[in-house]
Image (tube, rainbow, N blue to C red; front, side, top):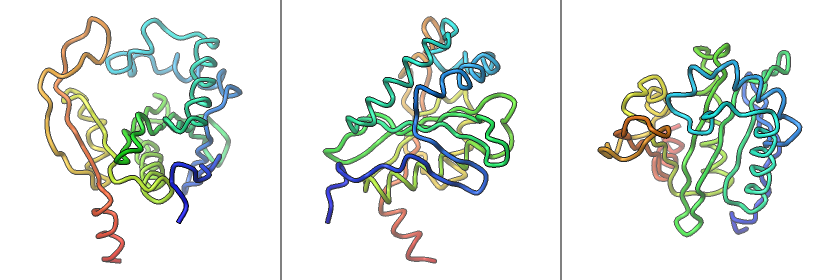
Length: 197
């Protein structure tokens, strides 16, 4: 059996409506355009939009994401609509801990494409990647109790709300101290679900 730390990571993942493409510096302009479009929605939760990133900042992030993927620390994908190639959002597996192994999942969708299930579709795809390809034992998401919209996604996908960590983090510099909900799915859940099919 191959070591999951050495398995090939697919450069493209296909879902019913999306192509998820491994992060690349070439995407900097379209992703930055979406960030600027979505500032009002991102600013309460994402520290990296304070201040507003330029195209160069976004390119640096994507270059770093490529390096992290090569180092097997995190795996970041940009989502594009199959029907017209429009950029939709970013989904990633971060903080990979190969000693367990476990990983944290994060995501955002541009404002003009929210409410259509694209976040759920991309999160489900990367959850599958984590369990089937990376062979992790645990995928978790940490979401502010104030962010009810994002909390619906792990619930919809069968993640378990394990705990609420009180006064745990500031989502943004100078912002309120957030309570964070921990949602997780473990490999036994996946095996049990597959066995019921």
